[in-house]
Image 1 (cartoon, helix red, strand yellow):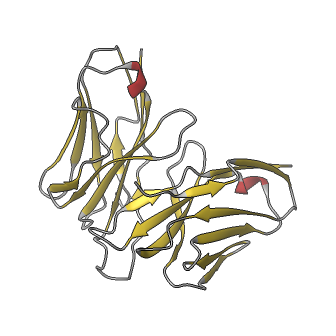
Image 2: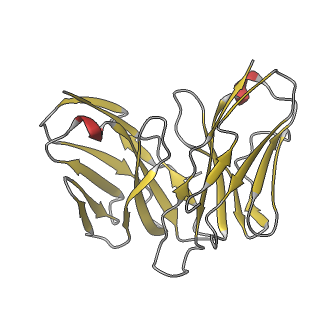
Length: 113
Length: 118
């Protein structure tokens, strides 16, 4: 069983604050890392697909970095807005077999107006 | 429709009854996944289909759970003799097979079926 961990489990930030959270995954058999945003009562939505060590991706105020050698990825949100409130999931794709995807337990972000 | 479609969106049933959940993936997506999220828990993998075959059923929690896929398209997840601990949101996702087209397709999720066992 692969260990994909996210921290913190939840956090509350004030509107306008910047924040970041972590996804830790196995440093061996890396194929890709995906980030998803999951808003309440909606389906998870893909944010980023990251494949190369040192990758940095950006979408508006949200960006992510990847370190495959040490097995972590950071997601950053600059100037948080209430609409950023959601659970952020990372998913590790294994290079073996059928490239199985293992999801972390998520970081639940609440942005307080 | 363009997205992954799941039905029903909500299902309330009595303990001991059988339920069937349906997933209609995006056309052309050969990979299909079932997950569930129980209250306060993360996303739990249940089963993976590639085409009509299921090379990974390792997440099915008991023999009361089964799934099939026909025509490389629609999938049904069946839970027999439901128990209260089966209450959860059941999510289906589909993607192109890894290595097909652009590298590393993300999964596209349906809106889920919220299952409540009384």
